[in-house]
Length: 65
Image (cartoon, helix red, strand yellow):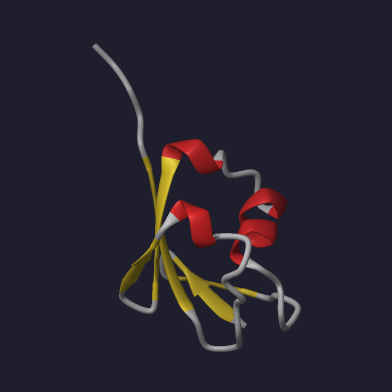
């Protein structure tokens, strides 16, 4: 179980951050992710494994004018 933006989500142990984001339909080019209080660089999404108890904050960027 992980917490995403305050909501609990079930997740298979060892899922990568990138795999989770793709599964949930996030466009990785337009978001920033904080895991357990630290920003995760986009270049590390694929190698960052999620574990039970992790907390993610995902922020989407929106454009406008």
